[in-house]
Length: 188
Image (cartoon, rainbow, N blue to C red):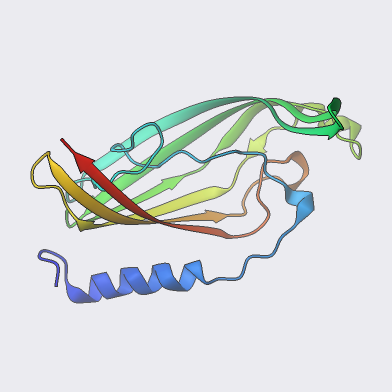
């Protein structure tokens, strides 16, 4: 058993992660989300990549990501640009994370598209659609922690995305998504 965490909490964390990772995901082309990658919701992230470090017990972190995208969603006809569905996009993503028991980190973020231009074949009014994106929840559990500030670490990360974004502006994925990860790192 891992010191400092009751066995029931560890078991519940792993069962929740396993159950949600097996949840069926239905595809929906109408709800295409052109985001290439999501930011890691942690103050210990390195250039948006998770590390095995977690916040201390009841440690709180908050922040805002600001993203700009140029042509994240276009239609090509061969090598020629046919239509820029999303030409420019500015997104603000406020987030809050909380450390629990020195082993667990829970984070939540809600992206907000504050500026977007593009061309939609179906809706001429699409040109400047803005709105909320998909609510994101991240759970990280340290499996092997660094000794002090150096050494080897392992963590399990489970990210969930809930379909809360606008359907008509390429801002949402369209269904519940789950992304399990295993993080290995070494600090010198």
